[in-house]
Every structure is written in structure tokens, then in C-alpha cells.
Picture 1 (cartoon, protein in one colour):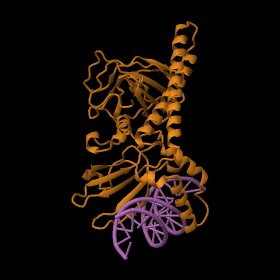
Picture 2: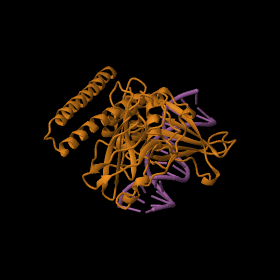
Picture 3: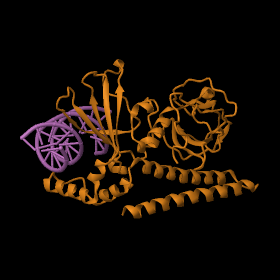
Picture 4: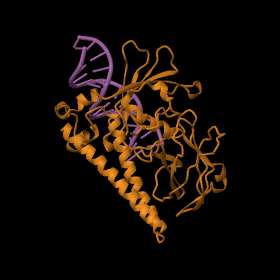
Length: 352
DNA sequence: AGCATTTGACCGAG
DNA sequence: CTCGGTCAAATGCT
């Protein structure tokens, strides 16, 4: 099964990669034809984005699970064959569910899932109400008094466990010594696709985390999502039409040799306000990154792809954008886009 | 009503 | 047997 899955996985990646290549070829061809309509290019760009998103999700999932792979698919089999709701509690049923889990190998796999710990210090102003979010949506499923610990331990699972077969969990334990410190133990990785990340919530510096290798791309992506900001100085006049709510970040960037270009607009978007949704190298061999993002509020919508023009990514993204037009709202103008200085790429080729 | 949280019970590991 | 992790009914919240 593992072997056949690896084969299927590789085949799937290959197929998606080929799809991307063909779409790019078609795009190049269409752009060489004078009669190409804007809609055609838009449609093509959508297809390309879908391919790239799928590939990214695949690689993301792959990198978060130790070999051999994809828990999500096996979980899917379980979910579809076991009924969760409705019936009264029964030990027999509970046992049969556990047996079923073990039969398929869930419990063993969950044990071997990557685990890493973060320590979060909470400010006094926050009222000691617990650590701020990590960008994911969690649901508490238990709390336990732990022997020798002053404070109970809380257990959380991903909100999308049943909807998207995401088996990530975390435990939150307040420190005995310093009640403002919470130790958060993450277990397993998210394979869910959480559409909106809370951009206002700060994330921990990557270096603190002490996560395992398999977590790298996952956490980098989360961090990037959380830290990406748009400076919308020039958008003031558009705010009634598209009321971005985006925190300002440290500015002072030069734009020499760095430029991003809005190359696409779209009306089929996700999220509230600004929501970076996709980050990847433009090609598997490239150090350059493509960032797709979106905004959809009060009917405004756009998506843009950004291409970094330098190979050195251990720096801040900056972009003076060109003006582009949306099929829905007319013209947008972004002052520039930048990456929070607290973020840095240790390895630019994080998705290879 | 539909969702999240609380909490006592259950279960497996050690 | 003890303890940590999970389940699921009861309860709370919006």
C-alpha cells in the first residue's frame, strides 16, 4: 500500500506539473496571438493557479507527514466508513471504532506523527487568557489536571478534523514557574486548507519553535501568511469600495532591482480583507517566488501574482505595483507590498 | 439551532 | 494501578 501510494503520489505530482507546463505553453501561445481576449488570459491564469495550488497542497501535505505518506487519505477512508453521529454512547461501538482505527493503522501513525513544542509568553494586558492564535482554527476537546502541575492541560484538535480529515492536535500547558508562559505542544500537521488566516495574530519567531524537519515548509508558509502585509497608503480613496483593514509594518524599502507586477485580476476569491493565500517558487528550479493573494469585501475582488526579481530572498519583499484593473471594480493601485522584517527565509527553496 | 466548551468516564501505555 | 489522552453527553453561548 505504501509503495503503491508513493507511486500514485509521484504520478499525481507529475501530472500536475505537466498540467502547469502545458498551461504555461498555452499562455505563451495565446499571448503571442494578437486576438487574445482578456477573459481568455484570465481563465488561463485561473487554471494555472489551480494547478499550482494543488501542487503546493500536495507537497505541503507530503512534507508534514513522515514517510511513508499521506495520512489524510487513509483517514478519509475511515471517515467515510464510520458513522459518528446520532447513536447513543456504547463501549462496543467505541471499541469497534478503535479496532477499526488500529486495523487501518491510525493509532500507530498518530503516535509517529511529528511533535514539536513552542513556548508562548502572554502579555499582562491580555488578561492571562491564554496564548494568542497561531493562525489555525482549533477546537477544545478536553482538559486534564496533570500530576505535579499547577494548571490543567488543555487539549485541542483542528476544527476541520471531520470536514477535511485534518488530524492536527495541540496541547496547551501553562507553566508552573511563570504563569504568563504557555507551553504548546503540536502533534501532527494540518492538511486542511483553512481559507482565512487571522492576519492580526502575531506568530512566533521560527527559530524559537524547535519543530522537526518535516514541519518546515508548513510553518514557514504559516509565518509568511501571517506576516505578509500590504501598505495601502494610496488606497485611501478606494476604501469605501474595498475597505482593507491591514496593519502597517516597518517601511523604508528601496525598490531598485525589485519589482513585482500585478499580472492577474480575478472575481472568484476568498477571504475577508487581505488574505495571502498562496506562496510558491515560480518553477521547481527557481528561487523566485510567486505570491497570490486576494481581497473580497463589498464586492471588490482581485488576485495578483508577484514575482521576485532577485535570487536572494533573505530579505524583505517589496513591491511597487503597477496599476491593474478588476473586472468588478475598475482600477486598483497598491503602494507597495512588503514582508515583515521579522520573517526571513533560511532556505529559499522551501518547497522543493 | 448550531456551534463550541466543559467535564466525567473510558481506554491504553507503562 | 496510575496517569495522560480522548470521547461524547451535557451545557453554554451566540
